[in-house]
Each structure stands twice: as C-alpha cells, then as structure tokens.
Length: 318
Ligand SMILES: NC(=O)C1=CN([C@@H]2O[C@H](COP(=O)(O)OP(=O)(O)OC[C@H]3O[C@@H](n4cnc5c(N)ncnc54)[C@H](O)[C@@H]3O)[C@@H](O)[C@H]2O)C=CC1
Ligand SMILES: O=CCc1c[nH]c2ccccc12
Image 1 (cartoon, helix red, strand yellow):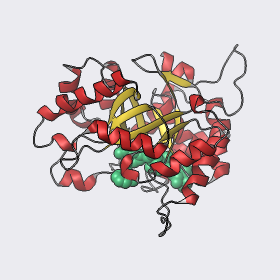
Image 2: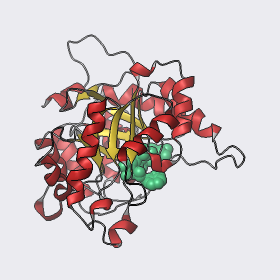
Image 3: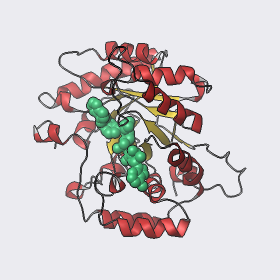
C-alpha cells in the first residue's frame, strides 16, 4: 500500500479520526490536498437577473464547508467565484483551514494568465489560491509550444505566492510531457474525468498510473458517473454487492474505487445528508485491491465520457 492509500484507510492503532475529518495527500511540492473536494462546476442555479449573484449557490457551498468539506473546487469558467468567495467569507472556518482551487481557461482573447488569476482572487476575496489549474489543454491544439510557455507563466504565479500549488486539468500524456521536460515547478496534479467507464487506458496506456509515476497526482471528477449520467451499466451489480458488504451507499463505493487508487476525488451535490454521509462513512472503510479491480474490470465493458466531447470532436483533443 502506498502512502496515499494508507492515508485514507480506516485508522488501526492510531487515534480515531475526528468524525468528518478528511485525510490529505502530500503533493510533490510538499503541500497537502484534502482527498475529497466539493466542486462548484456542476451546481447550477439561475443567476439573479438584477444582481448577477446567486444566493442559492452560496448556501450550498456554505453548507458543504459547515459539513466539513475544506477543499473547494472552482473555476473562472463556472462564473460563480463571487458566490464561492461569499461562502468562504461567511463561513466560520478560517481561510487557513480551507484549500481553494480555481482554474483558468487560457483563451486567445485573454492571453494573460496572471491577469486571470488576479480576476479570480478579486472575485474570491482572497489573496492566494491553494491550487491553480490550467482548465484544459485546448489552447495549445494549433501550437503545442504554448504548453511550455504558458506553464512558465504558471510557475511565475507560484513564485509570487498568489498560487501555492500549480497544476493542470484534462491533460493527456502528450500535453504533460513537454511541460515535465522543462518545468522548474512541475504540475502537482492533473484533474481529469475518472470513473469506471472512463479509465484512460487507451492503447495500453494507463494515464492515471503514468501521472502518478511521474509525481503528478491525479484528481478525478465525475467519479459517480455510473450512478448519474450513465446508469444501468455493467458496474451496477458490483456496486450493489459491495455496498451491502460494507453497509454503505453505492455512491460511497464509487468514491472509494477512486480513493483506493490514490486518486483525489472532486464530488458535489445539493443533498446535505448525502454529503455528510460521505464524510462519516467514506473514511471508515476501504475496498480490497481485488474489489477495486472487479469494478474496473466491469467498467471496461462500457465507454462513456460526460465532459468536453464537443471540443474533442472539433479536433482540439483526442
Ligand atoms: N476540470 C474539469 O474539466 C471538470 C471539473 N469538474 C469538477 O468536479 C465537480 C464534480 O463533478 P460531478 O460530475 O458533478 O461529480 P460526481 O460524479 O461526484 O457527481 C455528483 C452528483 O452525483 C449525484 N449523486 C451522488 N450519488 C448519487 C446516487 N446514488 N444516485 C444519483 N445521483 C447521485 C449528486 O447528487 C451530485 O449531483 C464539479 O462541480 C467541478 O467542480 C466537473 C467536470 C469537469
Ligand atoms: O469544468 C468542467 C465542466 C464545467 C461545468 N461548468 C462549466 C462551465 C464552463 C466550462 C466548463 C464547465
């Protein structure tokens, strides 16, 4: 067992973890990231037409923080960084106990990553983010040399202290290699869609293990896809059996499948009971390597991608 999976297993012979406390993973730059995060990308509400500010989003983010989620995942593209900022400032949890991620979509219209981070910090009402990510590699589709040059801009943000850690999202090996070849501060994490129906093993290549082997941690989003947008599939029987065995919900089995591979999980939701249940139950059990593989094996019988399909079809990616 590696130090990552050890960190999220039930403690044996250690002081019991405080209920609702989420263990962390040490990143390659020495900073720590809580293994379970709450995302603001997929809780949509209509913005109030007059103020352009959505109180319902603030309430849900605040409820997540109050439940014990200290890792919050945002992005400039989600257009709700002000709402996340309001939740941060209204919450009783000190800023120093929170881990705030946001992301930039590098666009030809707005090429300065430093200016993008300043906009995000202003909207969030904070002076640094814990993790700043390049949201996707599409900006470099026509000119791959942009991967290294934009990464140098990210490194300057880390040097400035405005981003404590820097990483990428939706990157494949072909996008990471040119960066790893020249980086002073290599990306600490790659946040990707990861679930049993999208295991990134194309052509015998295992992107998750490849990243981890290079010191780039993996964070998974849409981990619960078999229970949400791609239901009635081949993993259902295994989820149901393991949920019964461990006395937990199927969502919790799905989350553990990723965590037990050392993958940080970004989930979300508006159902407070379900979210609190994750904090209570997910750290309290662990799948065996055989059970993880059983889910993976069943998942390989279906292929499904929820995000970024259109950009891939347009040839920005594969
Ligand atoms: N970097 C990127 O390109 C992307 C990042 N993300 C980040 O990840 C976060 C989470 O993404 P999701 O796909 O929403 O994650 P997810 O796969 O964890 O799904 C969360 C949803 O599943 C529902 N759910 C949980 N258990 C269920 C069950 N048993 N039956 C039915 N529904 C159930 C929850 O209510 C919630 O709405 C986003 O908010 C965003 O922050 C998401 C997409 C792309
Ligand atoms: O981050 C990925 C998915 C997502 C959710 N909401 C938005 C808004 C704009 C771009 C991407 C996304």
